[in-house]
Image (cartoon, rainbow, N blue to C red; front, side, top):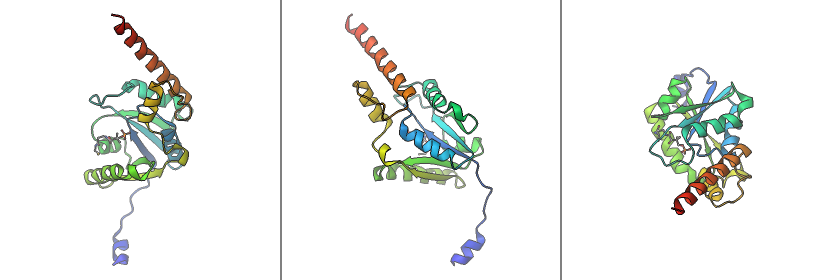
Amino acid sequence: MATKRASQTKIGRPVDTAVFPGSFDPLTFGHVDIITRSAEIFDKVIVGVLYNPSKNLLFTQEERVALIEKQFEKYKGRIEVVSFSGLLVEFVQSIKSRVIVRGLRAISDFDYEAQMALVNRKLAPHIETFFLTAREEHSYISSTVVKQVAMLGGDVSNMVPPVVAKALAKKYQERKGVGRRSDSR
Ligand code: PNS
């Protein structure tokens, strides 16, 4: 039976471009690690930044894209940042890829990630999801935790690249300014 199935298998063309999708609100060292490791495997990695106006995000679409571009500016051509909206599989197809890369930090990530991978496979059976396990030292990092710590004035330098840490400080400084102005009315 196994031999029959193996003999029926058709092997498609190899893939040179992978897509690493996400909200990136903001980019963390966990993301940076997965993007870098993917770029060591695939010729090109497209970081797909989801445009979702209904989600309450800290950084605008342009800001999230710009921060990732800044972080990877030396790798232009190998790592590119592209905004997308709508279905991920349609975006993956539009750039002629068939690989989605996702990072797994802990078992708790697995349910959601497996569900997403299965939905994507139902929608587009030829697209594969590859999971890379996060490095141990990044397993506690999430964009949500980073925003909480930064908002309360904590040090996020172990969690995000300097360019993001700076942007976070600026964002919360601006927000404090706005708060103070409206308090004084
Ligand atoms: O970083 P995130 O927020 O966990 O990324 C989630 C993302 C962007 C990969 C996911 O929400 C997504 O693919 N959204 C696009 C809509 C879509 O295709 N949904 C069907 C798969 S569940």
